[in-house]
Length: 295
Ligand SMILES: [Zn+2]
Ligand SMILES: [Zn+2]
Image (spheres, rainbow, N blue to C red):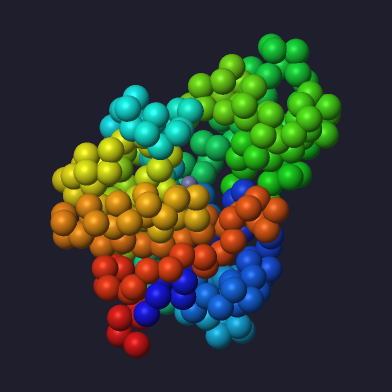
Protein backbone atom coordinates (compact mmCIF):
# COMPACT_ATOMS: atom_id res chain seq x y z
CA UNK A 1 0.00 0.00 0.00
CA UNK A 2 1.11 3.52 -0.74
CA UNK A 3 -0.18 6.77 0.61
CA UNK A 4 -0.86 7.99 -2.90
CA UNK A 5 -3.99 5.84 -2.59
CA UNK A 6 -5.15 8.18 0.17
CA UNK A 7 -6.23 11.76 0.18
CA UNK A 8 -7.60 12.47 3.60
CA UNK A 9 -7.62 16.25 3.40
CA UNK A 10 -9.71 18.18 0.89
CA UNK A 11 -12.09 21.12 0.71
CA UNK A 12 -15.18 21.89 -1.33
CA UNK A 13 -17.53 24.85 -1.68
CA UNK A 14 -18.97 23.78 1.69
CA UNK A 15 -16.03 25.79 3.06
CA UNK A 16 -13.27 27.58 1.15
CA UNK A 17 -12.63 25.11 -1.68
CA UNK A 18 -13.44 26.31 -5.18
CA UNK A 19 -15.02 23.09 -6.46
CA UNK A 20 -18.40 21.53 -5.75
CA UNK A 21 -18.23 18.21 -3.88
CA UNK A 22 -18.95 16.24 -7.05
CA UNK A 23 -16.05 17.93 -8.88
CA UNK A 24 -13.70 17.21 -5.98
CA UNK A 25 -14.73 13.53 -6.12
CA UNK A 26 -14.12 13.50 -9.87
CA UNK A 27 -10.64 14.95 -9.40
CA UNK A 28 -9.85 12.38 -6.72
CA UNK A 29 -10.92 9.65 -9.13
CA UNK A 30 -8.76 11.17 -11.88
CA UNK A 31 -5.76 11.09 -9.52
CA UNK A 32 -6.43 7.44 -8.67
CA UNK A 33 -7.25 8.13 -5.05
CA UNK A 34 -8.88 5.11 -3.45
CA UNK A 35 -9.64 6.48 0.02
CA UNK A 36 -10.94 10.00 0.13
CA UNK A 37 -11.97 12.25 3.00
CA UNK A 38 -13.77 15.53 2.54
CA UNK A 39 -12.60 17.77 5.40
CA UNK A 40 -14.32 21.12 5.07
CA UNK A 41 -13.61 23.69 7.79
CA UNK A 42 -15.84 23.34 10.84
CA UNK A 43 -18.74 21.77 8.95
CA UNK A 44 -19.99 18.31 8.00
CA UNK A 45 -22.62 19.65 5.62
CA UNK A 46 -20.92 18.09 2.57
CA UNK A 47 -20.91 14.49 3.83
CA UNK A 48 -24.08 13.21 2.16
CA UNK A 49 -23.18 14.67 -1.21
CA UNK A 50 -19.64 13.35 -0.86
CA UNK A 51 -20.78 9.84 0.01
CA UNK A 52 -23.01 9.73 -3.06
CA UNK A 53 -20.26 11.09 -5.31
CA UNK A 54 -17.75 8.61 -3.89
CA UNK A 55 -20.14 5.71 -4.50
CA UNK A 56 -20.66 6.84 -8.05
CA UNK A 57 -16.90 6.95 -8.69
CA UNK A 58 -16.23 3.80 -6.69
CA UNK A 59 -13.98 5.49 -4.12
CA UNK A 60 -14.00 4.69 -0.39
CA UNK A 61 -15.32 7.72 1.40
CA UNK A 62 -14.27 8.63 4.94
CA UNK A 63 -16.34 11.40 6.53
CA UNK A 64 -14.07 14.11 7.91
CA UNK A 65 -13.89 17.70 9.11
CA UNK A 66 -11.07 20.17 9.79
CA UNK A 67 -11.63 21.80 13.17
CA UNK A 68 -10.14 25.24 13.85
CA UNK A 69 -8.49 25.13 17.30
CA UNK A 70 -6.47 27.50 19.43
CA UNK A 71 -2.67 27.03 19.21
CA UNK A 72 -1.39 24.32 21.53
CA UNK A 73 2.16 25.69 21.83
CA UNK A 74 3.98 28.91 21.03
CA UNK A 75 6.07 28.95 17.89
CA UNK A 76 9.80 28.51 18.25
CA UNK A 77 11.88 31.16 16.46
CA UNK A 78 14.64 28.69 15.59
CA UNK A 79 12.20 26.24 14.06
CA UNK A 80 10.57 28.98 11.98
CA UNK A 81 13.98 29.93 10.63
CA UNK A 82 14.91 26.28 10.01
CA UNK A 83 11.73 25.69 7.99
CA UNK A 84 11.93 29.12 6.31
CA UNK A 85 8.54 30.21 7.63
CA UNK A 86 7.82 33.89 8.14
CA UNK A 87 5.50 33.25 11.04
CA UNK A 88 3.30 30.65 12.65
CA UNK A 89 -0.44 30.42 11.98
CA UNK A 90 -2.64 31.75 14.75
CA UNK A 91 -4.80 28.65 14.88
CA UNK A 92 -4.04 24.93 14.86
CA UNK A 93 -6.15 22.70 12.63
CA UNK A 94 -7.29 19.29 13.77
CA UNK A 95 -8.57 16.80 11.21
CA UNK A 96 -11.31 14.56 12.59
CA UNK A 97 -12.38 11.31 10.89
CA UNK A 98 -15.34 9.04 11.39
CA UNK A 99 -14.52 5.92 9.36
CA UNK A 100 -17.27 3.82 10.92
CA UNK A 101 -20.01 6.43 10.49
CA UNK A 102 -22.63 5.39 7.96
CA UNK A 103 -25.91 7.17 8.62
CA UNK A 104 -27.19 9.76 11.00
CA UNK A 105 -26.86 8.73 14.65
CA UNK A 106 -27.02 10.27 18.09
CA UNK A 107 -23.26 10.61 18.43
CA UNK A 108 -22.87 12.52 15.20
CA UNK A 109 -25.78 14.77 16.13
CA UNK A 110 -24.03 15.58 19.40
CA UNK A 111 -20.83 16.34 17.49
CA UNK A 112 -22.65 18.46 14.94
CA UNK A 113 -24.28 20.58 17.62
CA UNK A 114 -20.86 21.08 19.22
CA UNK A 115 -19.48 22.12 15.83
CA UNK A 116 -22.28 24.51 15.02
CA UNK A 117 -21.21 27.52 17.12
CA UNK A 118 -17.71 27.22 15.62
CA UNK A 119 -19.17 27.57 12.18
CA UNK A 120 -21.61 30.26 13.20
CA UNK A 121 -18.86 32.27 14.84
CA UNK A 122 -17.37 32.58 11.36
CA UNK A 123 -20.02 35.12 10.39
CA UNK A 124 -19.64 37.49 13.37
CA UNK A 125 -15.89 37.25 12.84
CA UNK A 126 -16.29 38.19 9.18
CA UNK A 127 -18.41 41.18 10.20
CA UNK A 128 -15.64 42.25 12.62
CA UNK A 129 -13.03 42.02 9.89
CA UNK A 130 -15.17 44.03 7.49
CA UNK A 131 -15.60 46.70 10.21
CA UNK A 132 -11.84 46.81 10.71
CA UNK A 133 -11.21 47.15 6.98
CA UNK A 134 -13.77 49.96 6.86
CA UNK A 135 -11.73 51.86 9.48
CA UNK A 136 -8.68 51.28 7.29
CA UNK A 137 -10.47 52.95 4.39
CA UNK A 138 -11.70 49.85 2.55
CA UNK A 139 -15.40 49.48 2.19
CA UNK A 140 -16.53 45.88 1.60
CA UNK A 141 -20.09 44.64 1.35
CA UNK A 142 -20.89 41.62 3.51
CA UNK A 143 -23.42 40.46 0.91
CA UNK A 144 -20.71 40.20 -1.72
CA UNK A 145 -18.53 38.11 0.60
CA UNK A 146 -21.50 35.89 1.44
CA UNK A 147 -22.14 35.35 -2.26
CA UNK A 148 -18.59 33.98 -2.66
CA UNK A 149 -19.06 31.53 0.20
CA UNK A 150 -21.04 28.43 -0.61
CA UNK A 151 -21.06 27.16 2.98
CA UNK A 152 -18.52 28.06 5.68
CA UNK A 153 -17.49 31.67 5.15
CA UNK A 154 -13.77 32.44 5.44
CA UNK A 155 -10.96 34.84 4.67
CA UNK A 156 -10.37 33.61 1.09
CA UNK A 157 -13.88 34.82 0.22
CA UNK A 158 -13.12 38.22 1.71
CA UNK A 159 -9.83 38.35 -0.19
CA UNK A 160 -11.68 37.67 -3.45
CA UNK A 161 -13.96 40.65 -2.91
CA UNK A 162 -10.98 42.85 -1.95
CA UNK A 163 -9.43 42.01 -5.33
CA UNK A 164 -12.68 42.75 -7.16
CA UNK A 165 -13.02 46.09 -5.40
CA UNK A 166 -9.48 46.97 -6.43
CA UNK A 167 -8.07 47.35 -2.90
CA UNK A 168 -5.42 44.75 -3.67
CA UNK A 169 -4.03 43.16 -6.82
CA UNK A 170 -4.19 39.54 -5.70
CA UNK A 171 -5.70 37.40 -2.95
CA UNK A 172 -2.18 36.80 -1.65
CA UNK A 173 -1.63 40.51 -1.30
CA UNK A 174 -4.89 40.79 0.67
CA UNK A 175 -3.50 38.27 3.16
CA UNK A 176 0.00 39.71 3.23
CA UNK A 177 -1.07 43.31 3.82
CA UNK A 178 -4.44 43.18 5.54
CA UNK A 179 -6.19 40.00 6.58
CA UNK A 180 -3.42 37.45 7.20
CA UNK A 181 -2.71 36.37 10.78
CA UNK A 182 -1.66 39.36 12.86
CA UNK A 183 -2.41 41.90 10.09
CA UNK A 184 -4.56 45.00 10.86
CA UNK A 185 -7.76 43.62 9.29
CA UNK A 186 -7.53 40.21 10.96
CA UNK A 187 -9.81 39.26 13.82
CA UNK A 188 -9.26 36.27 16.10
CA UNK A 189 -12.31 34.24 17.07
CA UNK A 190 -12.83 32.01 20.12
CA UNK A 191 -11.66 28.49 19.41
CA UNK A 192 -11.67 25.14 21.18
CA UNK A 193 -8.37 23.72 22.42
CA UNK A 194 -6.79 20.68 20.72
CA UNK A 195 -7.61 18.69 23.85
CA UNK A 196 -11.29 19.66 23.90
CA UNK A 197 -11.76 18.92 20.20
CA UNK A 198 -9.96 15.58 20.55
CA UNK A 199 -12.17 14.55 23.46
CA UNK A 200 -15.43 15.27 21.69
CA UNK A 201 -14.33 13.44 18.52
CA UNK A 202 -13.27 10.41 20.56
CA UNK A 203 -16.55 10.46 22.46
CA UNK A 204 -18.46 9.94 19.22
CA UNK A 205 -16.18 7.24 17.84
CA UNK A 206 -13.84 9.22 15.59
CA UNK A 207 -10.08 9.76 15.54
CA UNK A 208 -8.01 12.90 14.99
CA UNK A 209 -4.86 13.92 13.16
CA UNK A 210 -2.97 17.20 13.54
CA UNK A 211 -3.16 18.99 10.17
CA UNK A 212 -0.13 20.51 8.40
CA UNK A 213 2.35 20.65 11.32
CA UNK A 214 4.67 22.80 9.20
CA UNK A 215 2.52 25.88 9.76
CA UNK A 216 2.97 25.98 13.55
CA UNK A 217 6.72 26.52 13.86
CA UNK A 218 7.23 23.91 16.57
CA UNK A 219 10.06 21.34 16.53
CA UNK A 220 8.72 17.93 15.42
CA UNK A 221 9.72 16.10 18.61
CA UNK A 222 8.13 18.77 20.82
CA UNK A 223 5.01 18.90 18.69
CA UNK A 224 4.54 15.15 18.68
CA UNK A 225 5.07 14.85 22.40
CA UNK A 226 2.45 17.55 22.93
CA UNK A 227 -0.06 15.82 20.63
CA UNK A 228 0.50 12.50 22.31
CA UNK A 229 -0.09 14.03 25.75
CA UNK A 230 -3.40 15.51 24.55
CA UNK A 231 -4.68 12.23 23.13
CA UNK A 232 -4.23 13.12 19.43
CA UNK A 233 -4.07 9.87 17.42
CA UNK A 234 -2.16 10.81 14.29
CA UNK A 235 0.02 13.44 12.64
CA UNK A 236 -0.54 14.61 9.07
CA UNK A 237 3.08 14.01 8.14
CA UNK A 238 2.32 13.74 4.43
CA UNK A 239 0.66 17.07 3.78
CA UNK A 240 0.64 18.53 0.25
CA UNK A 241 2.68 21.55 1.39
CA UNK A 242 5.40 19.68 3.30
CA UNK A 243 8.83 19.12 1.79
CA UNK A 244 9.75 15.40 1.65
CA UNK A 245 12.52 15.77 4.22
CA UNK A 246 10.03 17.20 6.71
CA UNK A 247 7.49 14.43 5.97
CA UNK A 248 10.01 11.78 6.83
CA UNK A 249 11.23 13.64 9.88
CA UNK A 250 7.68 13.75 11.23
CA UNK A 251 7.08 10.14 10.29
CA UNK A 252 10.18 8.94 12.16
CA UNK A 253 9.31 11.02 15.23
CA UNK A 254 5.73 9.76 15.16
CA UNK A 255 6.92 6.17 14.93
CA UNK A 256 9.15 6.53 17.95
CA UNK A 257 6.22 8.01 19.89
CA UNK A 258 4.01 5.16 18.64
CA UNK A 259 1.72 7.51 16.81
CA UNK A 260 0.33 6.90 13.34
CA UNK A 261 0.46 9.31 10.42
CA UNK A 262 -2.07 10.42 7.81
CA UNK A 263 -1.65 11.89 4.36
CA UNK A 264 -3.62 14.53 2.53
CA UNK A 265 -3.18 17.11 -0.18
CA UNK A 266 -5.24 19.91 1.45
CA UNK A 267 -6.85 20.30 -1.93
CA UNK A 268 -8.76 23.59 -2.31
CA UNK A 269 -8.84 23.76 -6.11
CA UNK A 270 -6.57 23.00 -9.01
CA UNK A 271 -5.42 26.61 -9.21
CA UNK A 272 -3.55 26.72 -5.92
CA UNK A 273 -0.71 24.36 -6.62
CA UNK A 274 -1.84 21.46 -4.46
CA UNK A 275 -2.56 18.28 -6.35
CA UNK A 276 -4.69 15.69 -4.65
CA UNK A 277 -3.24 12.34 -3.75
CA UNK A 278 0.40 13.15 -4.30
CA UNK A 279 2.46 11.54 -1.59
CA UNK A 280 4.29 8.28 -1.63
CA UNK A 281 5.24 6.22 1.39
CA UNK A 282 4.90 2.58 2.39
CA UNK A 283 1.58 1.91 4.03
CA UNK A 284 2.62 0.68 7.46
CA UNK A 285 2.34 3.46 10.00
CA UNK A 286 -0.88 4.90 8.61
CA UNK A 287 -3.73 5.03 11.04
CA UNK A 288 -5.09 1.52 11.37
CA UNK A 289 -8.65 2.69 11.97
CA UNK A 290 -8.88 3.43 8.29
CA UNK A 291 -11.11 0.99 6.46
CA UNK A 292 -8.25 -0.08 4.17
CA UNK A 293 -6.68 -2.16 6.90
CA UNK A 294 -9.71 -4.40 6.82
CA UNK A 295 -9.74 -4.72 3.02
ZN1 LIG B 1 -5.83 23.77 7.61
ZN1 LIG C 1 -7.39 22.13 4.98
